[in-house]
Length: 193
Image (cartoon, rainbow, N blue to C red):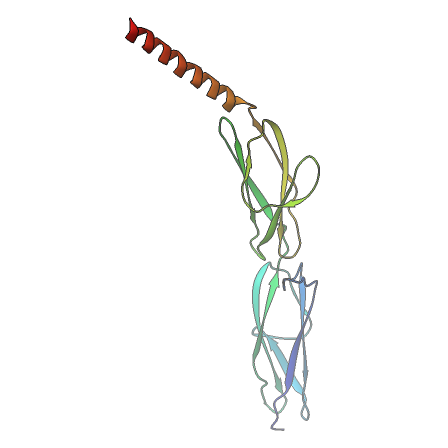
């Protein structure tokens, strides 16, 4: 027997379109040899005997090969397994001025990463968040935000309320104009006298 054996790997788990597994994964090896038969198979330095459960979040690399009874070794191969178990999170920031407010959102996911951020207002229509929201209309504004990771998992909706003083800017403008006019009239009366 001078022919090396063949070995293959199979993964069992819920794989998303992004290539990430949404939970734990079982890694199985299978080998074949045309004459002497398989002596043993090895997975990441350990002799393989049964499927191995991988439940640690992140990207893991596994190397595997087989050896037949005649001492022929298969090609050493490797595979990467991407696992994302935890849901993402989201942080909100509100910056207020006298006549407007800015609401910003940022999502976090340590494994597959953030795919998008969504938000909704009182009407309940879900929109995709692209950039900070500038609110200039007076009154109270209520928002809910959530992040979506690349496996499709979502954070919980996070609420935020902002209040903008209605017509504050217009009132300030009128006060400024009135002050300027009063000063101008006083200056003219003083000059003519």
